Image (cartoon, rainbow, N blue to C red):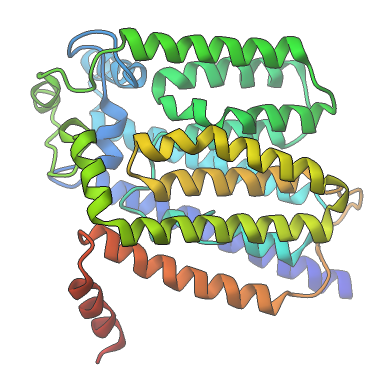
Length: 375
């Protein structure tokens, strides 16, 4: 009877994850059919047609080809690709969860605002290209390791660099997943992956053109895409760095949120995976150093935080003992104190996103809170 109750709680939790997935897919569908589209569509449509070889152009050119020869609208293609990878992310996450001996602490952390609940909270920026990286990591982490999985991880990561160079800054996670799952340090495999990915980044840096070389917006218009004010093709990195300084309060809070998530994650490791404590401490130091340039290159700190936090939680789940029982259930008591912390964290992050997307307007935030509280 006790196990039955625990099973029901786990299935209710998994049902909640499915609801989150459904909500995100519905919102992406709505966004893809708006008269004008922004970041979550334009990011996928960077292409080689405007000026030749450039960063992030591979997938957009493939979509252009499909549109031109098969007449499938670009916004429909983007929505289908986004939906596919979100479904893969949730499928492999659930599969990984069910394969492990679970406790409520890790399940609560999965639903933190920098992990799964980031997606519905920050729907304005959800559905970007990092979902390919997350799906790739989860695919490798779930189930048994096969030769095909190793090949797909290797080739998928290298191809991913031509889709978005942010993949490179999470290379330590790929290495860590490989070592954890195979239980060995394969210098030939990991050395080749590191060397080739670094060479690709050098090629992209020295030979890749600018994202918008003057014709991108017109090329999209002729293919039925009307961009709104917020899109990748009008993005000015230098101007955005100046805006980051102006909005320093928001970025200090982003940093605080990030380190809170790392603290909570490492606290879980010390409590439930003490044998991995030193390894994870070293990994966190190395991976933070590796990812740090991304925080200078791009203003989307909430995105970098989300990718890092969710990847770290997935890595922690992968380190948990396998579930050898035929039934799936959650062990241990529900951690009310951690749940309260995550609820408060969620509220702060939710309000922070409203503040950030309003152009860092404190007046807007206060009016937003008053409206929600009916004051």
